[in-house]
Length: 372
Image (tube, rainbow, N blue to C red; front, side):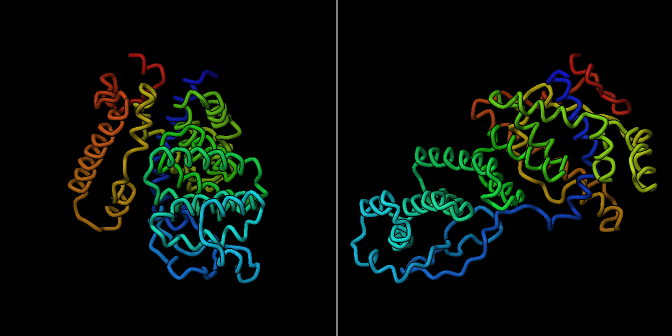
């Protein structure tokens, strides 16, 4: 199957499942993956290390990092601090002494970024991935040198790729690894390697919706386009459609698969209504790959469509029309803002990419119609 055909089919499936997924996300928001470090309770040797460091998630990353307990650390305390001493400790694998010495600098605005950077690399050497990534993200939150930030981003990505191939290092906790990739995507939103990793990880967790989304993002990157297309191809088999239907959330592209699946009769009745009431809409991403960058840049509008629909049925408001109009206006404004950001970075996107003159809302927009 050609890449463009796979891309078209999967985006259609992705769009078809939007309504159900919106509803599911509203009811499962407490299950969102966030960056959560392991619980630690360690006291730093230096009194000024309890500082408020900018963080990348809803959860506090200000808990001290784990260290090995090897006595009082008198050796590190006795020595006057210098980066040369730190490097000597690391070169000689005296990691605990280096950690204690670096901890004395975490309250020093000038030295804290570099201290976190060294800590990240030490924890990596000690096969402590959670502590290593925690330190790296703290470093990114403090560093202001663009070249150093870019270097660290590459190192973190390579480390995440390494971890994916060695799941024993993180106890095969794929949700944790997804959270780390997601945190890094906040800095490199269009990185194909990261999106491909996340697509593969979500596939392991049987989350086809997220897997398809990240595979679609990855297919825009020429470096991983082939791998992403192969992954997308897996989402268009009869076996996949039946398994997807049996999850009873996102409907499969082939609605006939529901009849072959072991599902509740109510679900079958709901999906049967799709044939009468739901049509396939055009997807701008198929015509312009830079649209994917716009999607990645766009911020969430709250309440989203799913929340508005629930509000209408629950009686939260009498007339949904003005609420829907407000949502539409906010989405358009956010899209325009995102287009400006993407084009400012060399992208080529226009609002005209969302115009499909040959589209009739009461009919399916089929793959062959994209060429007209």
